[in-house]
Amino acid sequence: MTLAASGFLTIDSVQLEYRLIGPQPSAAPCIVLLHEGLGSVGLWGDFPDRLQAATGTSVFAYSRAGYGASSPVILPRPLDYMQREAREVLPKLLDLIGFRRGLLVGHSDGASIAAIYAGSHADRRLDGVVLIAPHVIVEDVSVASIAAIKTAYETTELRAKLARWHKDVDNAFHGWNGAWLDPAFRAWDITADLAYIRVPVAVIQGADDQYGTVRQVEIIQEECYCPVEVTMLPQTGHSPHRESSQATLRVIAEFAAATLPLAQSQT
Image (tube, rainbow, N blue to C red; front, side, top):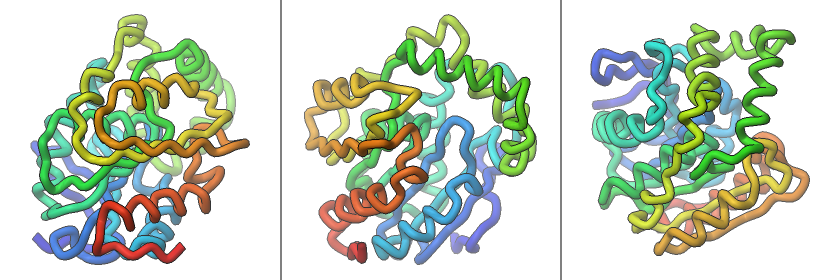
């Protein structure tokens, strides 16, 4: 199929909002962006455009169900919602857009989904994954920060700010926040998938990430048999692509140039 610059894809009767920058995924190496737990197509800002300019690739971003302008989800979300996205939705999406080769670049929840996909699919089209502020286990600091943001959502202007980016902001927020704060979610652990990743991995981690410690990175290094490159960004929190955007772009562009021979870095 030929994709417009923006629109909706239908997968299993669910409408998924998307945006495409650059060539069709069927005609050029493609970087697929997987957003954070409260993210959406719109919340990437101009990062996809800058990434396309820096790499010369196709860049495809989509809002998962429950986010942005995509269809809402039934709450509460199942606690394995990231595994389901990686194993049930993402394979169909890549096929539908005509993905032929490229990278997965995920942030936070999106990074976890990218890691699960790479570890559970022997996808010859996939040349590498970039994990920005990934989660592979649940840490005390993660739960504390997510509990704090629940209070902020209920008592500050945070809900109104997020409503700019989500058609059903309560569906988006409670779907994510409710899962992470469920006591049973403390057992969530995707380390078993890491050993099965067979493509290069680049990890970008903020030194001051309020949602996870360097232990997340150490586990990836310990469990992966594939090449793992780690970039720790000083004075950077949980969103390196916003807080240290030029450094983040440089890392991804260099990684793309090394793993995608047809992509040319311009940073």
